[in-house]
Amino acid sequence: MMIEVVAAFLVHADKVLIARRKDPPQLAGRWEFPGGKVEPGEKPEESLVREMEEEFGIRIAVGAFGADSFHIRAYRATWLSGQIVPVAHDRYAWAGPEDLLAYDLLPADVDLAHALIEKYFPDASK
Image 1 (tube, one colour):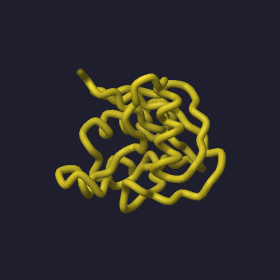
Image 2 (cartoon, rainbow, N blue to C red; image 1 turned 120 degrees about the horizontal axis):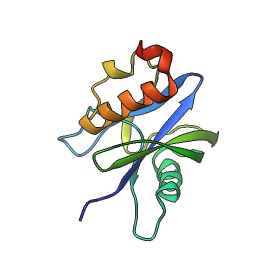
Image 3 (cartoon, rainbow, N blue to C red; image 1 turned 90 degrees about the horizontal axis):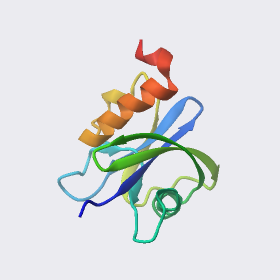
Image 4 (cartoon, one colour; image 1 turned 90 degrees about the vertical axis):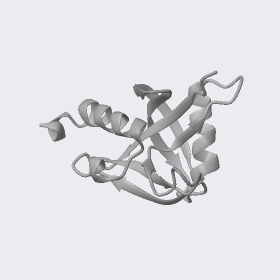
């Protein structure tokens, strides 16, 4: 059975939130869009709200579907409240469309980054 994973395109001031993994060792040091696994009985949007609270201590509102890659579904998200305190990551960054692909993103997140730039920052992809 395929694990369903959700991710946030959390855009703020023309930059998107990405985070660097601490674990597992084979993924440590690689960057990703924040999110996590959808638990049984959860809708993807509910899962994303829960994951952002657990992993970053912030409340978000989940908007429209943004893109998918492999088994990850990404949604546009809006930051509502809280201060970012990474739990499952050792760093986070606000990346603009011009430098997002310079980060060492996980393979599925590279595809999501291309989709995000094309959809939300079309002028940057020219």
